[in-house]
Length: 287
Image 1 (cartoon, rainbow, N blue to C red):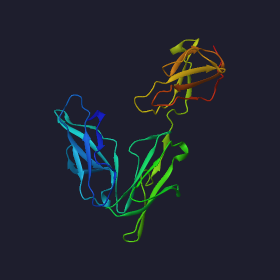
Image 2: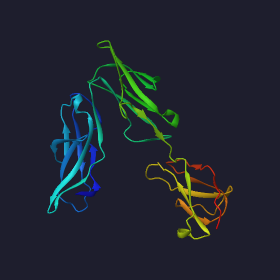
Image 3: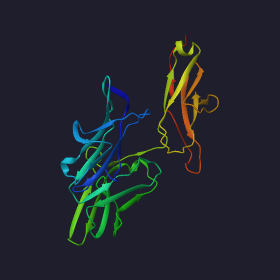
Image 4: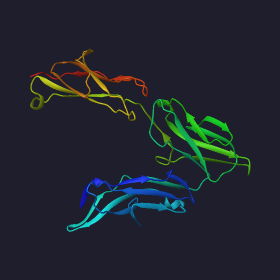
């Protein structure tokens, strides 16, 4: 039997990509509000691992230890073994090279400052560090600083990033690209407000013969505490009533070109912004 809730795996260590010989720590939690006693099973891909318990530690890792790690809770009951849904996997990669480009620790929004750090095996005396985007040099710096900061990023800054580090002690140069998705370090940025999509429901059984429901589908990516979003609905470029705090409005059924926009106000933390849907031409025949 399987419960309706899912185990949660957490990366306790700083990096999901480590060098050979390094160690890594994962933790599994079971969101059971009843506080039942669960045992924990660990998996790499579909392979069940011999480790058990809340904490999983990968010691002195080698390249073959790379994979997608997940956990699942299990407990014995009078009706048999009950298991949770498996956790969303965490991808771990063990790298045998000399340099790793560390990805941002959280999703990056348009307007944010992006930090990328080139991590080295050991502590060689660094001479120069270069950051590349899509194979083209973006930044170059001399000395021990291996972190790059891209301020006020836009959607155009999305791309494939890699770093190159050189030092003088043994006259060598190493290069590495961080393998994130499909073994490529891809950085993507999200707008605070996505392009909205307008949906119209005109079901007579739900809303009657004279009403229809306009629904705005939009992704709001602002981090907490985020200002509220206000929704404006339009017919033939004329606003339909006051702004709405919900993403829908019940309006009189009629032919016309409908659209909507959404707006979040300016605060000390966010700059205001808005976006408008493409007009939606309503061509049904009113009964």
